Image (tube, rainbow, N blue to C red; front, side):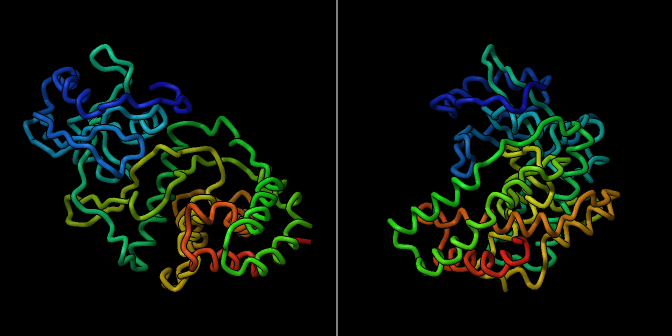
Length: 333
């Protein structure tokens, strides 16, 4: 496996290239990969080609797989590191929190391109009807991902630092030039934040970074694996944003998707749920994670006006303001 931090520019006409490389892919899979039905998926960030194909396991059993090409180095590294299984151990690997990978590589047919053959899922979470059980399953799967990722690779780097004072400045400038709901109220609250932004930024940038965060925890990145006993296991997909950090980042990332409609969380508290699951998995807290979660909420909310024209509904912007106003007194001196 190569460097997960490298970047890759996907070639044009990915589907045509993938189709041309199909014979090489099937050869790399020792003839176990059957004919591939290629298509271009709008949901895939890189614009890569994807395809469905059967794959013959040891003993002759055939399973459905998803073939992806090209795959960025970070996604390739983590998907393979966490999911690679032998064709003879397919059934025994149902407990993995990420897709099972039957074949992968960073070169194919003389091209320096990443590719993956992984299990195909037929069942996704219903993003429009997430109940408490489904949300808890997402958080539990993410906690299992954290454990598996740290076991696969020690956390050997610190994430890139952000200039939080500059982020605050960008939001205040946006309030002066963009029509944002409750702009006057936003301005008043951001003035209060200004008094402690340096302290909050310092606290966050010096957090314990002992975790590989998934980085994109939402319902669209969670599938269900139907296991041999009939149960459905949540599985995290899309490893393209995995990075070193603190685990509360993933919990708060999920939580803030509900700003402005917190009732849809069904009373669930993502940070607390993930903390309990981590403890059950033997990952004891090494920091005041509730305080760090509050700091993270404030810093994320501070950024909302700056990106309001690109992302976020009026309800989300209003919810971010409410979170900022209620959380700031809990973290500022």
